[in-house]
Length: 530
Image (tube, rainbow, N blue to C red; front, side):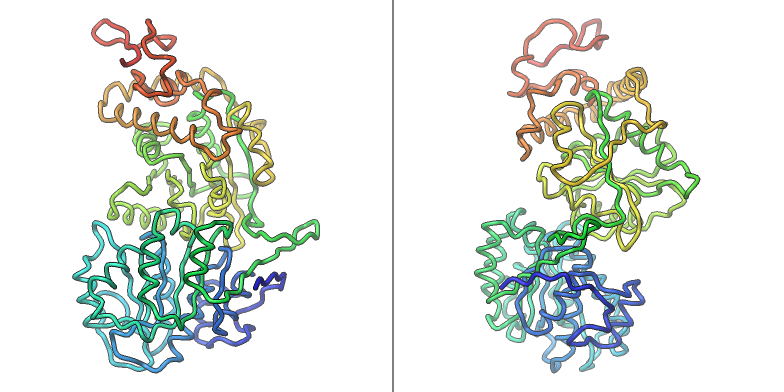
């Protein structure tokens, strides 16, 4: 069954069936006085014991948090080890964020005060509800510590990443009572599958009672793996498609583009000018405008983890950005560093401009408030992430800007295939000259020459970028043969010598310097590696 609706979203107190007044008060105190379309259509169905399949949108988390809390609180208190609801999330960061939403609301229940957190004392109160976070990885609590906490305090709701949840169930199955489980949520289900968790999900679901309600939230439903997961995990689900009224009075089945967003593209005439464009743009956008303050918080999306690592090191050393606080975040960092970076950027003061360099780890689900500008330094390999990226700004009724960098030529065909954009190349305060870019590139190369580790990072970044570009889903636009690989390597990444890789076979073994000025080492020019 598919439910297509353009019902206007009202206040949380207008829901039918109604939700508890203390929950209405709690979400209002959190700044949510009115529902989003996703919430208005999902919450009633989930509360009426329907399995739901919903495309992710604004306010998705409350769409399952509220029904879970209502259901758990309506049940008689069982033994401590009886679990009532489970939420499975693809990443530690998203799981932690969901846990924090549960915690914020539960704290508003009089009988739940002091029931959350590591330092709280367990209380035998039939009105209490307790949520527990299960995430693995270095720096997270060990499975032994998790089991000890569960044994002592119990938990009604588990918010977990797939691997830790499987370990929790399989390794200590006798300790966990799943007979009372009423609700299961698979959050960002398409991403769970993209990350290879299908076998884990199948195993986890096999341990759960069939008589339960399941909610599946996904950015896309056009996926064979999702279709199979829906067959295995849900029973006669209601598919929710929210229609949004546009300015042209047309109904569209998409609310991925925030209404307060201004979407730009920035044409880069030459590949070696790209970094100078970014630095100039960041500095230009923090300048206070007559109509308001300049931007404070930026997210810059890059193609690969190696590119994030390299450019984070480079940008942190440039005097042009000395007034910025710069952070980096990607999936290959240790869980401890990811957690510290995420919290530091999220809570960074607006008194200093802040930039987060990241991969698509940060494209979906995470709540990063007060983002003024999203810059897509590299268009995403998976074109679906275009909307996830720009959705990090212009949230909760605020305005925001999103800018995608595109090279002159074929890449400009990307415009219009995603969402309407406005060119930014003609802005009077954004001049670009070869001289400015050359000066910056010379500075970068000087920095790289003096730091062997940084040069290794540059090589890794260059190689990863070539592989990214070669395997782009929009291969009819992003074709490696149209890139000037020498300029990209020597000027764009500051390389001293080119690495040996199949994509560079046409350049291997040529004599003479491969840049206009050459690189000297002990009186000899660097040449292509052999």
